[in-house]
Image 1 (cartoon, each protein chain N blue to C red):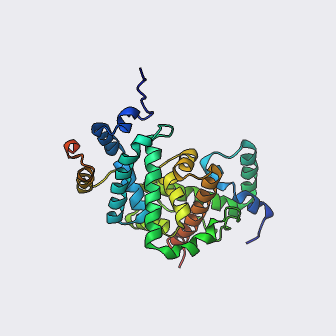
Image 2: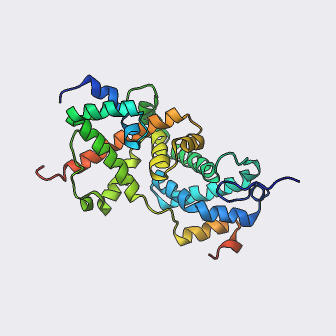
Image 3: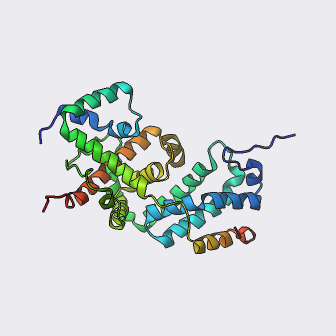
Length: 202
Length: 83
């Protein structure tokens, strides 16, 4: 008799592979919020995020018979969603390739920090306001796609380096390099933004 | 700004430092370096704060109820819609 495999997250692998609707509904309930958030951060648009959300779960349902349970269900869903989002962006903006190549070469040195201004001392209410939230989102939008997705998975969705590497099918080294580059770039953008809000600056 | 050769050497390690995943030895070296180098200290502090702000302001993972309803319908899971 075959043993029922219960996945790390408490789902039945067999039920999911066999297309069990109730089990699939549990997965959708558990992870749709995360996938929607990923879509919102990547695409910055509710309609596009909803499209990615639907496509991800439609693809997942059809692919579950081939899911082997070696990675977490969530990591596997993130992989589908990340692919969908990246394909969507490439289709929408085919001219981003030139932007990409500027940052993509892994062997290239990290960009040097240009602005050395300490804005950490700003009061919390000035650091976390609605305006700042908007600026944080706008800054993410300026990242090249390949490091944007890494930053979102690692620093917003909270995946580990290993899970991010699995989801994007890249090496852990590449995850680290792209994450670092994204953070340095965001630091520059936030510094440019906050420097004007420091006391004593014109 | 005076440019230290050392700053460049540490630049690649700053994210690992912020994540607490830098080797103990490099970590000590960087701490020593930052005691003398105000610039690197500022870069590390603002890098840390940048990551912190994104953590703090990340929206809860939820979806608007109409988006959820359309998702379940699209997946033919209407029977499982009621929470």
